[in-house]
Length: 119
Image (cartoon, rainbow, N blue to C red; front, side, top):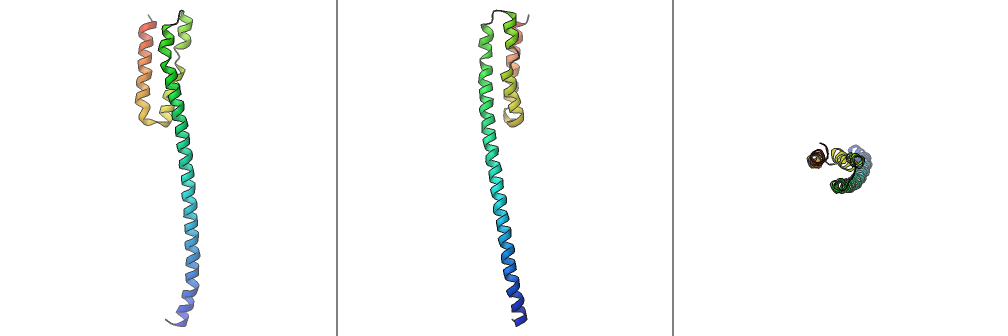
């Protein structure tokens, strides 16, 4: 190797080292950012899943409450099924695999409601 080639190599190697360091640093920062976003997404999904479960359980109380109603006004207050609708909305937005189950749940409640109380 000639002295001129050696001088070029001595100036290029540190520059490549610096560039490699920048690439590694940026890669680590991007990976950390992605992991943070994924963690926040998992926390959001867990929270929404808990909300869905709470709404679903509240909607399961409605048929029993309908059985104890004594007036039409009491029935009309309960037939809106806000909890079932909220559970279905959460399934539509966050849990595609539960869409069909919440749709069936709402349909069954509506059928129960129509059959027993609307004549």
